[in-house]
Every structure is written in C-alpha cells, then in structure tokens.
Image (cartoon, rainbow, N blue to C red; front, side, top):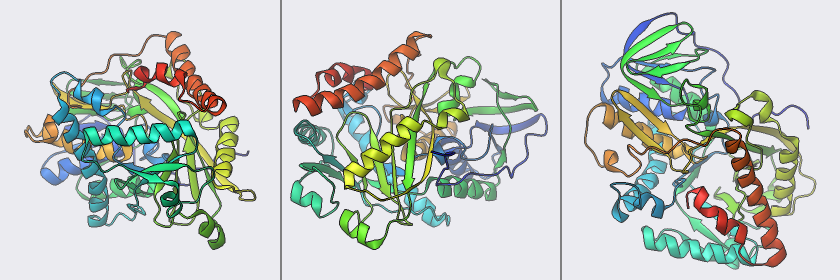
Length: 449
C-alpha cells in the first residue's frame, strides 16, 4: 500500500509556539474549523478583542484537514432526538435544520468574500439505493424528512439518477441540494491566514494539557483569559478530565488519479454532487475540482483508551475495502489510486453534537464526521454567547447540551467496536435476505436515531 498520503496536503510549522505566560480576552484551544471560525466571527464582531489560538500540531492537523470534503446540512442526531432534548421542541428541531442549511451557504459566502479559494461547489448530495432494503430505507427517509423539514429531500427514480450519476445496481436515490464539496486543506489554511490578518494570534506546536476557568495550561506557559474555548474534537480525551467526553473513531479515505474525460462521461457527476449509498456502514465520496474521485468510509477500529496516533491513520484492510467498494460502485477496473489517509473524528455518547458557554468555559464538538458546516454554525453561535447576544442561534436545541460520558474501559472499546462490526453485519444481512436488517434496527437507538 505504501505510506498514506493526504491529498489535501499538510501544513508545515510556520507559527511559533507560545513563548510564555500571556493574557488574552479569549483563548481558543484547537486550530481546526471550530477554533478558526470562532476566532473569525469574534474578530469581525469586535476587533479590539485579544484572541489567541493554541494548537498542539499545526493548523488543520486534525479532522479539518483530513475529511472527505462534504460541506453538508447533515447533523449527527435525528430531528426527533433534537426535539426531545430538554427545553427543545419540534419547532426548535426544524429551526436547527434550517440553520444547518444556512451554514452550508455561509461557508461559501465567507470563502468568496475573504478570497479563500477552497474549490467550493454546491451540487447537492445524491445517496443511491442499490438493493430493495436500501430502496425502502430511501423512501422512508424522504417521508420522514417531509414530516420534519421544508421538504427539500427528494426521491429519485432510477432514470432520474442516471441523469446525475451512472453507478451500478441503482434502483433509486435520495437527493438534497444542501451540500457543497470543498478542498478541506485549502479552506482551513485559508481561514487561518484570514484570522491572522484580523489580528488573531495562532501558536502552533503548543499542546494544552488542561483547560480551566480563566486559563489554558501548556508546557510553555499559561494563557489567562476571561473565556477559554475547547475546540479539540477527536483529540479532546487527551485533556485532563476529558478522557471519556468523546470517543475518537477513525474514518479513512482514498483518492484516485485524475480521470480522463471518457471515464467521467461514463460516470457522470458533472455538477459535482457529493455521493453515497444507503448502506449502514457509512461511505462518502466526491468528484474533486482536479478530476479525481475521493472516497471514504468507516470500518477502522476504535483504539483502547481513546488513543489517537499517526500509525492508526494507516489501515491497509480498510483502504483495500474502500478501493473495492468504489470500483464496484462505478464499474471501474483499471483506475489507479494515488492517495490514502485517515484521521479521528469525535463521537459523543449520545451522538449529538453540542455547543455552549458556562462560566467562561466554551466548547463545541462531537460532530461525528458532519463538522465542515456545523463548525461554522458553532463559531457563529459561540461568538453570540461570548458577546452575550441573545439570538436565534443561541436558542437552537444543541446549545448547552451535555452528552453523558462514555463508559470506562474495557466497556467502551468492546461497545464501539461491536457497533462498527454490527453495521458491517447489517449490510451483509441485507444482501443475503433482501430485507431491512434486524441488526441495524436494534442498533439504531445507540446511534442517535
């Protein structure tokens, strides 16, 4: 397989570590999308604020620079779950859905306004149904979406699907216009440059060992601030006292060589919709601006005690499975794969992302892989909370939500890996029986549905 290479590139160390103790108005821990969007909106709202961002590695080192490039309106918890949160309602869940849709557009608008060339293209998302069980699930999803939202999720018959994408075994699909594809590396690096122009200070190679009221503690000094924001997503368990807050679960990605025009004529995807299918073990793909297929999915194991290490980015078995799945999806035979990489995403115990501010401690995360646009919403919401502005964003149901901790080990390791295995078995069950999986039905309450 060779060493994994991240198609989106990596950020070299260009910013100095924290030189010692310092004071700030806001200190943000983590220079990924959450931290940088928060810094951006705060700096735009109040240029006088002293904002410091601390990053253990380099800008975009985590999921922000490793994801599959979907800027979607997906939220990890279902509308029904959101409506059932304390103080929430059906109307609040619908408002959350609308806020997510607006966030997809906001990422594109800010990128254009600030000159961030991140290959943003809004072509929607098409999710294929390739078995009778998947077809039934697709129709049910559309019906549920019409009960809870503005009715923008459509069912496509097989001939309608072919007009957008020509995949194998297609019986139908769902389509939503609320998704754009991006180049994640260009977005995170461009956003970092913008916030620095706005006066924000970013220190790389500065690990934070503890977040406390009024301060962030590092080996090089303490940053004291009225507000401390945790924006660490899958790396959160490394912080003191946060070992069970989220579970770092790995998602892996492969990319092809640039494909020729004849191949694209056969595949379609001319308007660059992001694509997936209705299987249980998540897959996701996009056609990039330079004519490649980027394709990712779950299946890599969760590592004991929430460990996150560079060695875990490489899982040859999963890379091979992703390549085989993509070949099967589009009937590809001779295409070459040039890149393979991975990284950890943050999964809260109830699969519900959250954002909040309590006594000067702010946080956002638990996106379960749906973070590209959700981080933008988090940044705007944290800005309103920090500036004590009561807005429509601060009334959304995820604000102030606290997921309970994950179970201690070894139960966490056993449960998460059993769940991953169950999704694989559910897909196998459906292939063999042609009916909706009973395994998946039993697992649904554990996955935020």
